[in-house]
Length: 145
Image (tube, rainbow, N blue to C red):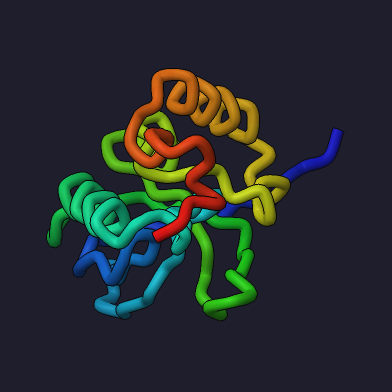
């Protein structure tokens, strides 16, 4: 059995930068930008839907919210940002966004989320089946603006 190294970081939300990127501060007052792990809100969906998804992230993570970030020290290769799963009251915000159809599973980084890979895939399948959020399109990864 492989042991997975997790780092848990206690932080507070400073703000939501965009649909899958947040700004946080730790208890020492250090600020960082974090990309939400294993999920994506594709640029291929219409702008109005990206704006709605961003609004939902802001609803779930208002400024001042205490959070726990679970990370494995992974960095988003495109944005060069630390990547983490965000928890509020012991519930994964990343998973919740997928459940609601406000985000899709990011297949590129899914293996970095071994601990909840199955949950994410099931949540996405359910959202797709119910045509929730971004899944009102046949495939939000390939929608046209």
